[in-house]
Length: 404
Image 1: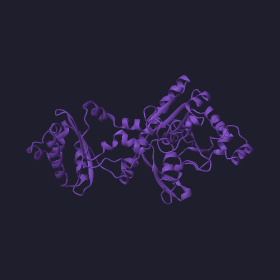
Image 2: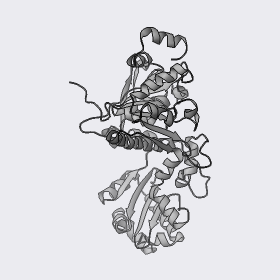
Image 3: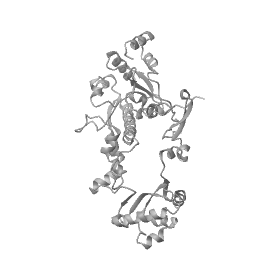
């Protein structure tokens, strides 16, 4: 039986991107059936090919961010290399790059250069700060995006220094927004025949990630209360999202609104104690910092009496959203993660093992995603050059001259 084709089957992508925010959009497209060609420097390749090395495995960084794409080595400083790129662009739907601002234009593959070759082309450019503003020309990294975009504060603990996190939240957020922006522009191009440039940035992605909490902060003109709990709303319509530890120090979280407060606390067996000390209404934690701290301290004391599995089960039975707080290893083995294919397994015969990898965050009923592996450097060079009209002798000459 023929393998079902992905929803992006037939879409052709060329990318001169490196790092994470610049490569993940196209890896996702490859998962969904797009034909993605990654341009790499001959003999060197993407610098991230050796990043995230784990003994006995391929590069975790490169593999995660480039699976399913094709590798073409090309010296874009050579006019013959540019000519090959232009031939690929003439047949492509999408082009992506995340070079330092101005570098693509300097090297002959800026948007104005490429749209002359293919007016329908969707051109994606990922930067650190965005295309405008005083720092638009500066390079960007994940840590820079997290630092400027507010996430360090969002997950900070009062009294402790703010820090950026170990997970590349800015890179991944920017990548997913880039993925969506490209597909929106592709829809427009297919409908009108007119391509366009799509700019995204690490900073812009982080501001979007802050969501309604940023809106509330701007409207109030004060920074949010951070730490163990997020208590928001008004005294009449309060809400809480908070984390606690059980008697063994295992953390969990629950979230509810004021209408569910008595239901939840009664199910847990805490309500009478809370009511006795004036904490029977969640709203008091909104109007009084002192009451909020008193409430959290009392709940800390109560939850330390038993294990989190029991507390989570009680809350879920009462129709309250609750869950254990997983470590990354726990998340990778969570039963819902595995059941939905959010983590999958793939064979690496070259390394003699089957390994866990990211699955796909989508489920398509008719056009399922297919997980591939990252390419060897230049693995598809000959086939791709032959596809745009180069003979074997011409390809050999280009290789001898260091063009590919």
